Length: 483
Image (cartoon, rainbow, N blue to C red; front, side, top):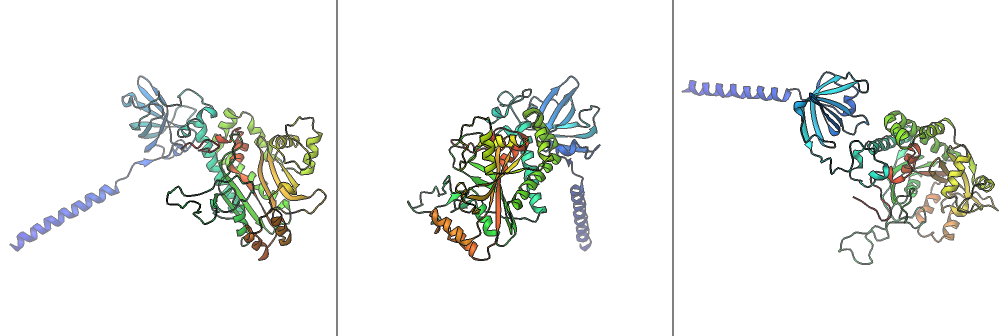
């Protein structure tokens, strides 16, 4: 009996080992190599059996073969798939989502060095080409695709825009990191009105439990219009700080220049000596980010410069070759008044510069970015440093004007002198509201300054896009909040 039991145990043990060996072999089996389209068109895993996933950009069935162009958003260029006509499927249409497995080979065609010889094609997501708003052989304009914010990322032009936007973001972060700036996550909800313009979205819960007349935060709270004041807090402990995030303005405007939600790049620098400390950071950041985009998104930028805004590449190249000139506000007013141009808005000293003035000044200076400094004191917010240069009375403020857009950056030295700042806050009736801001000047205050750059306007500048709604994924503006 003992021998029978031992034999059974031995057989069971052998089976267990066999199962373990089988299972180990199963899990050690080499899995299919999955490639992004950008990797496949660069020849990664040449000669290997690979899988790609993406969306069909074109279908060409022939008698013996089937040709597909597949794109997954990783590059502007699609991968050509060559398959036997036996793999033809009526569901293989423009816009459908597919998974293709086959051998990556060198292509005999000059326009693409590599192609995928398909062994299997699986349609993952169907797309009815009749109902799909984008047609395979049509080049749709930016205005047309703007009607479909949920689908326009499927087009070549908008997928290129999104890749450029992603690389520009990376380039800006890289510049600040390489130059010793600390990134600060400033709040989206705030009790401050940094700009003082009153164009704020107030934040309150939608719940019916909220008592009428009772603020959720106990004080009125708003979506931020700028992270500047919070950066100023941090500049009391860090000599270089920046933030990059969404900002909101309740402007009742549907113009080509304005959005209700947009992204701002803002920086604050401590121990400044003059406006030149700020203009150097503005210019260096602009150049660094633009060179990064041109190096990492050449095909995508070329699509815009060739098909959307022909000739704009010359403007971008010219911008990068020259240092940005600087003129004062007074010099700008003199230039405008000596011009033969007929302006719709007045050009008297003390008037704010309008877009038409800004674009004229850019052209006057050689169609290159130009810094305008020392604006009238009364035009600037309470925190701008007083130049104490009466009778004109200007503030140490600066704007960067760029081709095709006008104002791209706005900044100033901050008023670090406690007595002058207190007097200014008393004048505008904000001394109690900004008592904490006065504390920053009472405890270890240093001279400092900062600026903000409108990210969407930056994209307009380098790509030549006329409408700001075409450089953001989901534009929000007056009477429009789709999705």
